[in-house]
Image (cartoon, rainbow, N blue to C red):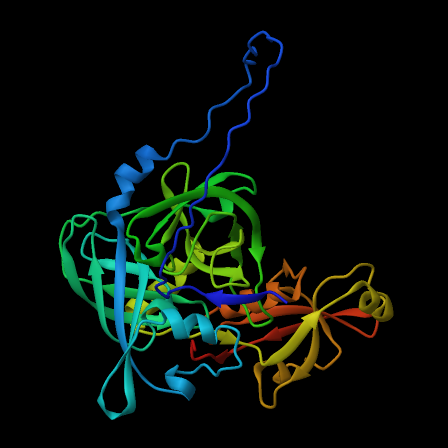
Length: 375
């Protein structure tokens, strides 16, 4: 079973060399191939890297963690990632049973006065955060806020006239288009890799509220928090996760859409945390079998499997077995659509729900949604 792993550890690299014996054969001469008018050159990222590469930064952190079993904080020997961290975790013993955990990641400058977006897991629990630019300048950074649920963090360095990226629109991005990533895989600063968008609006777990952009761009530990660029040189995502059996890149990488991340950034900059709307229901997807049993024409919506006591949903009569079909007239095709829509609303927002109950559509208005903590 493939597991999702966060990036951020520094690995040692090894190279294997081998010899190849050339084989030659004679073939009859053939006329040169004629290039068709529709032939196109491969994408060229040189201009993008030259213009926006200086805005991509290397982030190194030091965190104190109480040692767990065998001195690996928070990871037991039975965990498949245990051996990975045992060899490459970069931990340094310190007095009092604590260890100093070294980490490395990436980020990008979004304003000339030093605000930087990165991943929350890059700076989580960090006692010290250092930022290094491509021109070798180094800064001590302050963590303004980190939202673990979306894996978005905002840090600040003191500077003026710093190089910045250009923010794009992920909604306009298409599956199959070329994209590029810049980051610090294995601590190798300002590494550029490229690929295509493989899918959009991916959910990586039942609790995920992030509509991830899936790509085949090579990202590895240390690339976390780096930007995903489109061909126009605009940032459309923050590289965040990979699927891997080994801890390294296996062809599946995931980025947080930048418009989603900017919404989180605004709350972090203003309040240092994120507050979210909350209905107070547990939901699951509606399969074809469930749709048939409930009398729905097709599988859609979010099936309510439990309702919390004194929640916003309970106050308006939402009940177990209801299927929520729309929120504020926006159709809920998948269960994740509801979770994302509610999470992006501010506490106290009024919402209109349409539900399927006992073979008929019903309407409800939730006047207030409960406050979320942003954790």
